[in-house]
Image (cartoon, rainbow, N blue to C red; front, top):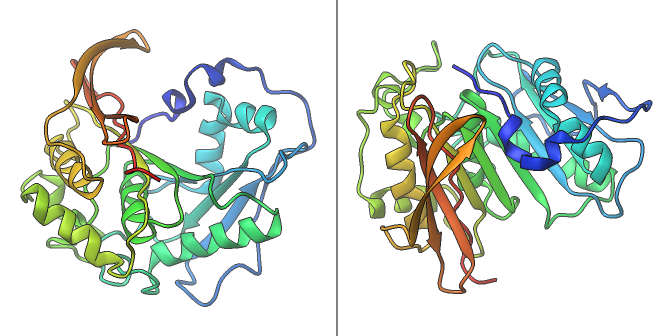
Length: 297
């Protein structure tokens, strides 16, 4: 199951892509410390970079690759936005079909799994392009969505925000996970449920020494998703509201129209007065944007 990344940047996606020499580059060498050899790095660097540019990591879905998801980002307008605003796209690629978000290695900070590989790519891009470490973002669909939530949990110091489309709560995929088929039937079926506190504790154990601010989060999911149960969004709301210290009930609920569909959007407000939004649910197929914000920083 995969969804287009078109909604991610909103009105920015209407911008036409200018002609230029910039292109997807890779595989890039020199970034890895020996973490899984099946993970490679690709990047898109616009012809005109912003000073101290932001970075957006785009993680592909199962059976996908960097080139495929870059093509979708180009069609949807994310590449055009990168050209206009001068930010860098980092596109990790696994030859292992799906991302590993279920093993202990991947769910441990610097544990040597797929998450560490993505983190090392970000660090490499930050140094190589003199990018802004306070403006690193991540997005992905399906397996890439699961990787998005995992990265926010395992490397909380690295990301300012993340948007995932049809994923699962960080740690959910570990239940019954089999490396041989990269699947967790229990999690995919929506059978893994915890209290908000239990989910939050699970995330905090992934990087137990971390006490700093956390990333904002957007959660999207399809109510008619036949592969990954929408129950996972309900569980993800519990997880991230606890991690971010937000109330369990939304501050406000509104209906919005997006891509010719009606959505229900729930918003949370943190103690700083910052507007935080978490999952809305689309009435027909997908749920709408979720964004939870960090505590005061």
